[in-house]
Image (tube, rainbow, N blue to C red; front, side, top):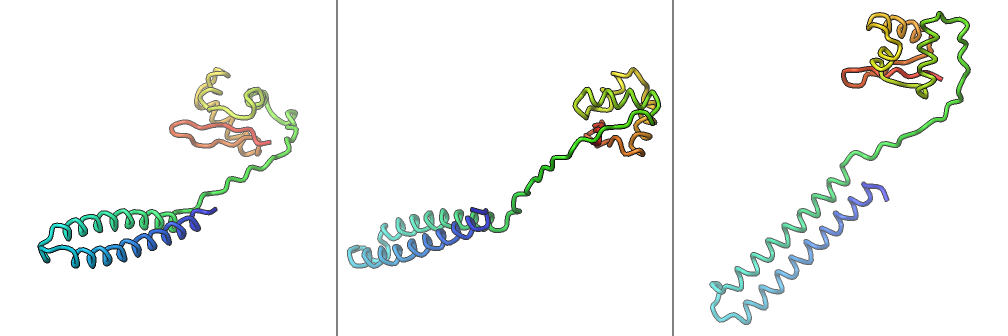
Amino acid sequence: MKNKNVGFLVCGIAVVIIAIVLIFNVGMRDIVSQTCTHGPDCSMYDTIALQTGISLSIAGLVLILGLFLIFAKPEERIIVKKIKKKKINLSKLNEDEKKVIKSLQREKGGMFQRSLMEELEWGKVKITRTLDKLESKGLVERKRRGMNNIVVLIQ
């Protein structure tokens, strides 16, 4: 069942509980008024008021929970697409670009830019420029993750 439907169900149950508590409260007050000899100062009236307050508080919390479920953001559906791998033509790439592509292929298509830089023993400028070229050719994509990038091979 969806959260919204569960929320309506919980709200309905809370309203029924509130109605039952109030009806029970009226019935108990009638019984106490007929049986208590102390009149309106009878301690049973205080007990009824306390129990009614506690019961209505619990029912109110259940009602709030139901309203939360009704108005809460629904779960996002995650759609996973399978993409057919295309063969990358390495003949049109220079030697540095080929090294990057081969490293990414060894790492199953993605790795941190810093790890790639360390593996190839290149500086920041060289790896950035090479990745810029590969991105412009549509072969890789950089995704920001905190203070680092993940370089992903587009296939």
